[in-house]
Amino acid sequence: MTATATRATETGEFSEELVSKAQAARKASRPLSRASTDEKNRALERIAASLEERSDDIVAANAQDYAAAQADGMTDVLLDRLLLNEERVRGMAADVRATIALPDPIGEEFDISTLPNGLRICRRRVPLGVIAAVYESRPNVTIDIAALCIKSGNAVILRGGKEAINSTTTLAGIVREALEDAGLPRDAAQIIESTDRAIVGQMLVYEGGIDLLIPRGSDTLIRFVRDNARIPVVTGGIGVCHTYVDADADVEQAVAIAYNAKVQRPTVCNALDTLLVHSQAAPKLLPAVVAAWAQDNVEVHADGRALALIGPEPPTRVITAIEDDWGREFLSLTAAVKVVDSIDEALEHIAEYGSGHTEAILTTSDENATRFLDEVDAAAVIVNASSRFTDGAQLGLGAEVAISTNKLHARGPMGLRELTSYKWTIVGDGQTRT
Image (cartoon, rainbow, N blue to C red; front, side, top):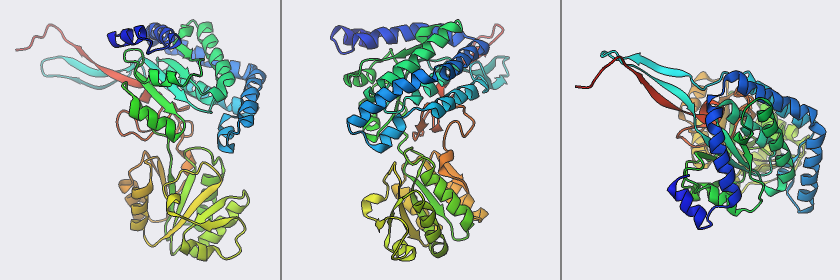
């Protein structure tokens, strides 16, 4: 433990649970970092199998959390994130197996060269060490993060919200048992069982105990982490996602994509929030999009030009957009709609109101597609597809620990490589420096 951590422990700044579990994770991180790919994959396969075998236990534990959260008045958005059913548990197992199939980044050598003096140099991927994750309402994150940390050789400290304590404790227990069954240290996966919110603040200043902290949750949580951390953190995940329909877009395709991006799972960060429509496409497109959204009772907040084109008797609830609708992450069956006169106007709107998460253009113009890809400043920029594809599993990463809107260390969905650092290796044969 560092001197800072020691002093904090002596003064009571850190809880005993955090200190003991962080120390155990640090000790376990060393043998885990040396584990072979086969050993790590055996642990992951055991996790996947246990998820399937113990699906009833997991769903039952989650039902306790769900009932308590519902009684406390949790919003439908958060209840959807909290829910685990048999289908979602099977999906978790499938994501773990997808991680097994991925190449192990640890030990990968890159930027290899031999200097004129004969020194062989390269950079070699290594684990970060101990990664902490603080998350709200989404117990499936327990498995996603644990699986990626194990495969990348990192110990993990998990701290879920009190609303999911039964679910996360059950899932973390499965991870720890799987590690032990595979001959790896079970202490490489820790769960903070205390629901005292003060522990999150302690984790943010636990220098030497935690190498990287990743928050998953509300804007309030992420801002708190960003503003108070003294250790490295990766923040992001707030998704104000725009889809711009260009003048020459394929209308049928655009309607299908706008429907999928908004409706397929509206409570997540990569769902569509604002639809920008070129004025030449709007007369035909907007009534069709609103009719499609009406199947799922999407509420539309439309600017004046869009209102006129949607018509006086829309098939779903349509209200006049206000300034606060632009740049708003709805996380619900609500979408803002605005008519623009050019791709330049769309780009200006996105630059002003976007959150740097995911932005999409629907167009048949190669020139405009290229402009959009080149000029939009976001972690993911998409052409002619749904914003819902900004997801670790969908992009072939197996899963993700978070979607970062940072520009340093990692950006976008964070998979295995984003959980590594590197060290320089320099191999000589007696060279000395003159």
